[in-house]
Structure formats: structure tokens, C-alpha cells
Image 1: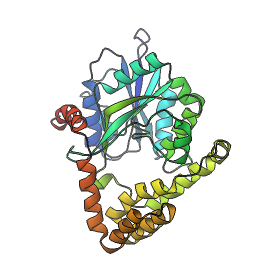
Image 2: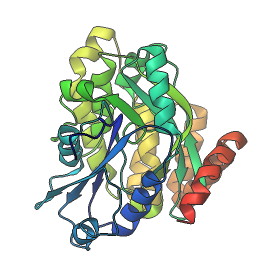
Image 3: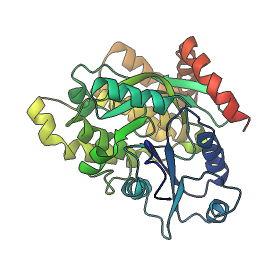
Image 4: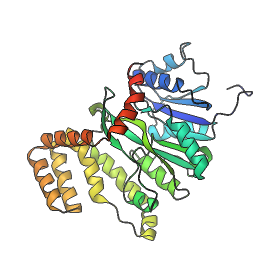
Length: 326
């Protein structure tokens, strides 16, 4: 980057590995953002073997504030994000996975919220999208009331990784992402951020979070192990604040993936949720899951789609459709 260029307002870190088509879509989308702010984009290539490195080095990549970092051996998403964080020159940093999308207005609006509120970081709402960019769910921001306590019990943030905008020095001061965690590293980071500053929330569909079948983890046991590791890591803070893990919510969130990937795990997960939050409604849900897990998965998907507010769907589709055609 030339020394006479202005310092970027925001650094956008994009980890990638062997998903060139999705990376090209995201970079084209980021390059089209024209909101008056100065951006740099940092792509961290995790030893891709699909032509990603060659494409990024080619003359057709025109983003003049593009940094490319490459790991010759894959080090994992947390290490990739941390490498980007270390290289960032912007006052604020955002992280976007190569298969997700962001509203062209999100980062500017989050920055203005931070400046107006005195917060040091922000999180946006999301819509879930499938592989064809259809809206199939949503996640709204929580209230700030007892936010740290609720975050310690369960990851209440709708997009704890992709929806963040963080003061760069704050992200560095808390140590970035924990590279020892295989999953839930974004939740862990947000807990550490929340101990220092309550976020400013942009409660609108700022992130398109890809949740197609191809993007789902097929082994929620690893996800649960990571969740338990985060709970153990912050056990002292939870004890000090009198917070218990929200196991019913945790098992319910993991059940959504289990229903699509494993009948046996679905049954175990439904029973675990029932033990954590016994109720007549949960008993019925458990019975249906045991008898017909695929039918239960279909019902859950229908419910998720129906629960998306019309205004959220309309707002998201207004910026998703141009991306679909890119």
C-alpha cells in the first residue's frame, strides 16, 4: 500500500480455502461498495489448491487496497482471521467468510452507531440464505440489558463472526480469536469483547449467512465440545455473575444440524434438550424427532422461513438480488 494513501477506515478480513467461485463473488461485491468510506480487503488464503492464489495474483483483480496473505499449510479459520487482524491498517476491522455476504450499507451504519454511542464494537442482524441466496431464516440482535450475563450462558448474537465491526486495537488487545478452539471461537471472542465494552447493535439484516446443507457441519459433537470448552474457559466469570449455561438453548441450536445429518444424533440431542428444559411442548417435540426426524427437520425449516418478518425479507432481497446476478 502506498504511503501517501489515506489510512483505511475499515479493514475487511476474508479467510478462504478452495472456494474460488464464492470468493470471487464476495470480492466483487465488496469492491462495489461505494459509501464514502475507505476500505482495505485482506484475503487470507489457507493453502488453497483450486487456483485461488493464481487468480488473486492476476491482473483482473482490480481492488487497489487488496492485501493477500497465504498460509502454505492450513492453520484453521481462527489463525487465518488473526493473521488478517495483525496485518490490518484500518481503525476498525470486520471479518467475513468467503461464502457469506454483507449489506452494502452495513459497515457504514455500524461505524456511525459506534461513533454515536461510544461503543467500541458492533454486531448486526442477519438473514440465513441457502445456496441460491434465498432467505430461509433470520436472527435479530438482543437487547443490551444484562447482555454479558446472557452471552455467557448462550451465544445470543445472530452473527457473532460475520456481523461484527470492532475497533482494531480492541480486537488485538483481547488476543483475537482463540486458535485452540475448533468451533465457537467467535462466541468466545465476543465474550471477551463484552467484558470490556457493550456493543452497539444494528438490528437489521446486515449479513447474509449461508446455511445451505453444504455449509453445515456434519459432526455436532465437535461443536458441542467447543461450546463446553468456551463455557469452561469463562467459568470463573459465570460463577462471579451467577450465570448457568443455557443447555436447553444450546441443544436446540445443535439439533437443527443433527436433524439434517444423523438420525441417531438427532434422537440423542432431542433427549438432551428434553432433560435440560422439560415441558409438555418439549416432550412432544422429542417424540416427533425420535419417530420422524426428517419430518421434524422439514417442519423446522418451514417455521424458520415463515417467521422472517416481511420488512426483513424485503430489505435483504433488495441487496441480495444484485449479488445473485454478479
